[in-house]
Image 1 (cartoon, rainbow, N blue to C red):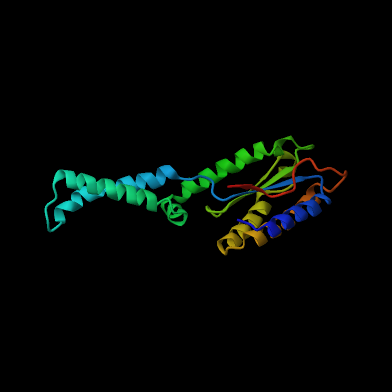
Image 2: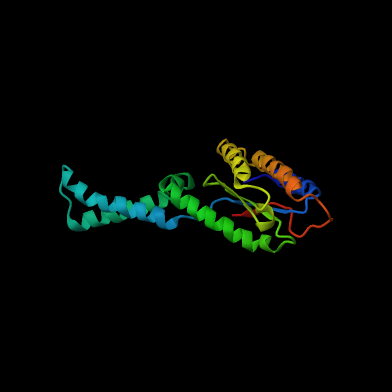
Length: 203
């Protein structure tokens, strides 16, 4: 997660960007898009079930009750182990991670009321840190003037920085780059601040 210093710098950068555009920019950082409890539990159950056919290769004989107890112990141990976040993220298929992160991004777009800004000029920068997922969602008023290719280039650079552990710097660079596009597409015509400037963090 970002330090308080980076959070302050993000808010200040958003304020500077919005002073040059009519667009409203909101940033959201989620530590993870889902707890993926069901996936880690399924993996633990699957591996515990695999123990049964492997027991026949043991050099000693186990009674049914002993084998059953051993399976339960293995399942509980793996279920706890797989809750360790770095390991959990390795067990979750990439498609599932991206689907959950994308779904959360769209919910946040609505929850932060970006769809209700004057002129439909809302822009969301959404980051799911554990998934290394970044998405920029622009409302209709901006999408008419800025192509997805422009956003995609910014997103790719953001993801590259996140993988290097530089989430804070990546946020600042992303906001500045978005600000350049916003200023061109929707230059400031009035002083307004419809939505919060601070970084919204989802734990």
